Length: 111
Image (cartoon, rainbow, N blue to C red; front, side):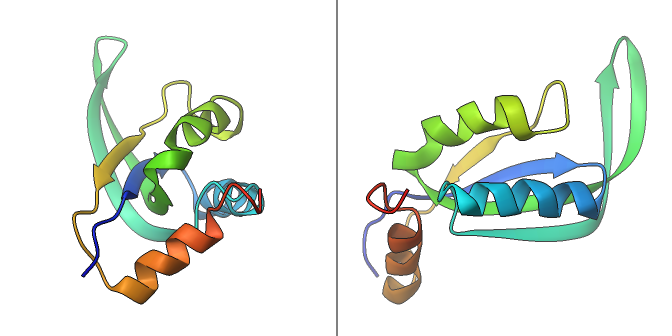
């Protein structure tokens, strides 16, 4: 298994439709190689001094560290939340062919 700068980025949105719209745009811009929707998430959090309890869709985005800054900038315009979750988790190892595919799909040369 090769060393990589691959990342799994977590975010949440309210609906599957919002998730699909976000992922498709990020794919078109080659900011991510893949987005996976995980419906049925439930988030509890403090907002405006109240406890919120919301149904959400968890989105797992596969990208590279080299694209993270551009992904963060895109979230400013594309993400439907005022304060979107964007947590980048490093991938320490993975299947060579899969990691190569992430690299290829998020290549700056293709963007």
